[in-house]
Structure formats: structure tokens, C-alpha cells
Image (tube, rainbow, N blue to C red; front, side, top):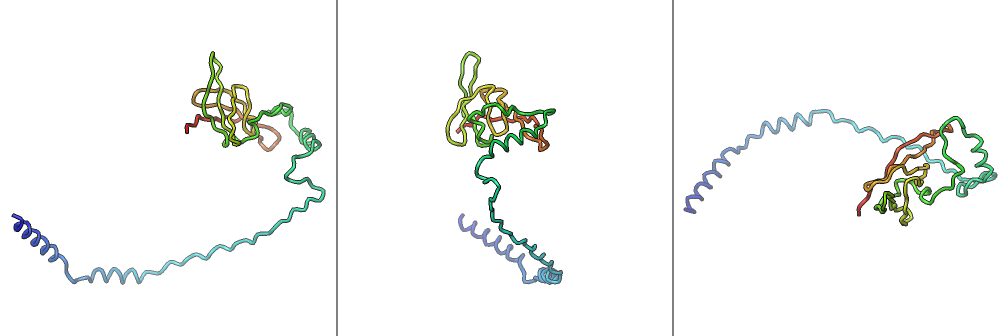
Length: 176
């Protein structure tokens, strides 16, 4: 029986090799045709602009690493437009208002009798407890609602013209 299988294998091999021949003229024609095609040029590298170094000389200007003086803050307050939406600039900032929203993460909730608190991990690694009415984020983010799956926030974002726009944001529960 194994001898019979060997015969069939030999027959199939011979027939397979019979299909191969030395006529490669069609392949040689194709290669010659491809070689005749024009070679596309490579675009030259764009010219790089030279970098101009700027040395900061403070002179009578404020250092960029210190907060502005109270006089400058009062001057910017005088330029505010009272006819449009404005945040409460006299409100005392809460601890989580020093962190951007993308560095905050909700880690869980706790509460009872209808009062729900959210646990938020800040960029400094500390865990904070917040509830509806607290503020977080850099843009006066007022916590509107807390659920077991996330926190809904309403931020006030400056529009560049002295007014502020409301924007909805959220922090979703992050599981580790």
C-alpha cells in the first residue's frame, strides 16, 4: 500500500514538473517594458527656515515665572465686559481648580440618604471628595450632577473677546 502511494506521488510530481518549461520570453518582455518606463523624479527636500534664538531680557517687564501683580489683575478686571456671561472672580478657588480636567479622574462614589459624593484623583496623586456645587478644572468647572458612572460639569471658557461661553464636560468613572 505505501508503495502505491509513492507511485501516485511520483506521477503527480512528474506532471507538475512537465508544466514547467524554459520559455520565459513573456517574463523577459515584461521586465524590458518596465525598464523602458520613465523613472519618476524625487521632489527636493523643502528648505528649512533657520531658527532665530531669542534671549529674554526682562528689563522693566515682569518675569514669566511669577504671578502678575495685583495692579495688573485689577487692570484686567476693569477691561471686563459686564454685559455678557462672566465667572465670579471674587469666589475663593477650590483645591481641584488648579488641575486641568484631563489630569483628573473619577475613582468612585460614596454616600447615603440621597447625597452622593465622588472621589476624584488629581494630578498630584491625592484623592479628593467632591459633591454637586463644587468646582474643579481650570475653567470654573461647576459640578452639575454626580452619578455612579460619572460627573457632569459646566465650564466657563473665555471667548477671547472679554466674554465667557458655557461648555459641558464630564469625568467618567475609571476602573483600574
